[in-house]
Amino acid sequence: MQDRLLLVDDDSSLLKLLAIRLEAEGFDVETAESAELALQAMRNAPADLIVTDLRMEGASGLELFEQVRHFYPGLPVIIMSAQGTIPEAVSATQKGVFEFLTKPVDKTRLLATIRAALMQSGGQQSEIFEDWREHIVTHSSAMERILNQVKQIAGSDVSVLITGDSGTGKELLARAIHEADAQRQGPLVAVNCGALPEQLLESELFGHVKGAFTGAISEHGGLFRAANGGTLLLDEIGDMPPPLQVKLLRALQERRIRPIGSTESIPVDVRIISATNRDLDRDMHDGLFREDLFYRLNVVNLHLPTLAERVEDIPLLANHFLRKTGAYQMGNVSSFAPGAMEVMISASWPGNVRQLENVVQRSAALSTTPVIPDSLVREALTVEDHFLPSLSQAREQFEHDYLVKVLRLTNGSVAEAAQLAQRNRTDFYKLLKRQNINPERFKNRA
Ligand SMILES: Nc1ncnc2c1ncn2[C@@H]1O[C@H](COP(=O)(O)OP(=O)(O)OP(=O)(O)O)[C@@H](O)[C@H]1O
Ligand SMILES: [Mg+2]
Image (cartoon, rainbow, N blue to C red; front, side, top):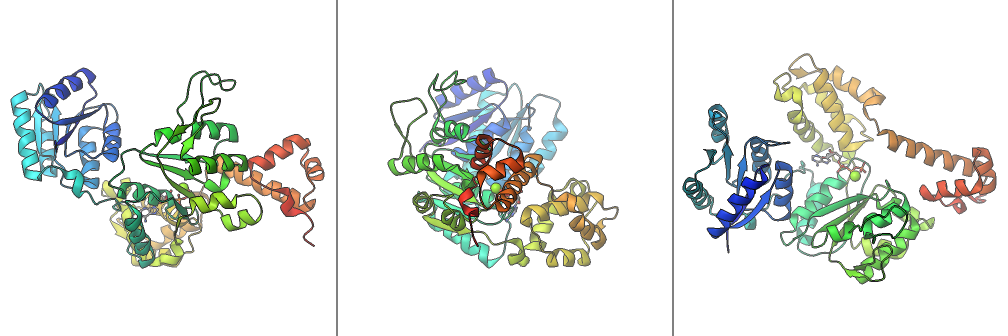
């Protein structure tokens, strides 16, 4: 098998030139015009070696190296840069960059360096990559059980439903499942099913042809096709509007999609991971979620425990998040006082890991001493503010709660509820539909 090289440079003509030369030497060459695109390319198909420019728009070659070292330890990285960057070169090679070459890069020298690097690393890193779970910080046995399950299902394409409270790490786990599948060819594409109105979500998922509806000025491929050969993450699946649930079910059964406005269906090969913090059992019972779709999606269920259910992870996670803060990296803070850790261990964490991350960030930022005192952590925990949902999340939540309230007051009579809310019935129905609320739920529960 050919060794795979990933070339990264924001100078596209240089990139092409180098690619052609290296391909002529028998390498399988992939190119990327930024560090971000390079990481994406790595996720799709890991290379055996990376050659990157130092200074680029966005993240630099060194930052790319840091990321790569994290995800793919041992993968050799060669950095190219203009002259006059000797100090950077020295610190880079100390950090583990294989070699620092100055531009214009001499072809023979580059080839020799690439061969030496591949020889040293043994090449073909792609096969031994097993760091899919590296982002998931845990030593709880409940989490270990989940990760073991992930390993077992990694190679298959069974549908996985991830459930768990907000902030427990559902999205993180979904990404790990995708990473764990060494056979995957395509990318992971994520969509938040609660964030878009029905029509838009439909065209996002399935695509549309040109002129399919007003505003469809060009063809749109859709996320199913974008995820072909990879994974489609249907986040907040519980918020998917019922009419779309039918269409999704059909797509999953037939493994084909039909773009809006098209008469032909297209075969797709995607692994489906869905995630929700809603109680789908209740939603099914209330007629808000289709049972047949549920069974399609829930072939394997991974349920993430709340943070309070895995207190053993709290110190580990707190230190992990602390090390990621600016205050720590600048040397302003170094650790938590034992009392501070105790406060965190006994807190209730309604916002789970995400809230812990916020509390750590806040107390680290506010600390005036290297050891973060318990008072700051306590404050960060009690100040309601720092567990802030986004404005649109807050609005959605308010709207949902409001609608439920008026429906309760009126025993599910939409006419009366609409009147109370000072909306006409059509509008009110739309709101209910958007929020996935079935007024029947509120009828006479005497
Ligand atoms: N085990 C973990 N190790 C490290 N970071 C974690 C872990 N679990 C969660 N996180 C971090 O906590 C935050 C929330 O995680 P994530 O977005 O995956 O949660 P979620 O369950 O999808 O939340 P929501 O239901 O609100 O969408 C992220 O920043 C994520 O990186
Ligand atoms: Mg999420």
